[in-house]
Image (cartoon, rainbow, N blue to C red; front, side, top):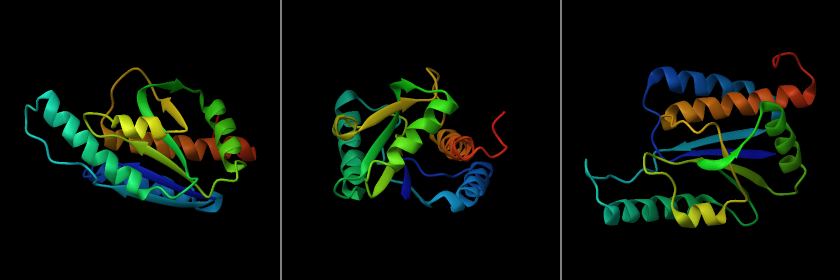
Length: 159
């Protein structure tokens, strides 16, 4: 199965990128994983609603242009469904058996995701009601996907 993690924001901090690379390496036996980042549109320091909507629309176009026909889209969003690690593992198994050619996970930048991306999403999940930096969210996502595969395979890691 092919997987793509789309981070609208760029992964800039070395400690995040090293952790993400490590989990992507560990995920190698479970599928083909790709990270796409840096789709963020420039925005003024104190943007108004009109500018935020313009930025979200541009970023949304970039995200949607990456998606192939019939690919699964999972958004990470504060309004999404919170799942335990075991439930995420169950979802991974279901998504893997869906017959879709790729599973895309998307993490928005500081202003979230465009309405068009949210509407296109097959599912929306949330880590917490708390807000995390997008770089941390990518690291958490790669770790949770890895944990999910370990749970599914009955391999030691998840305790």
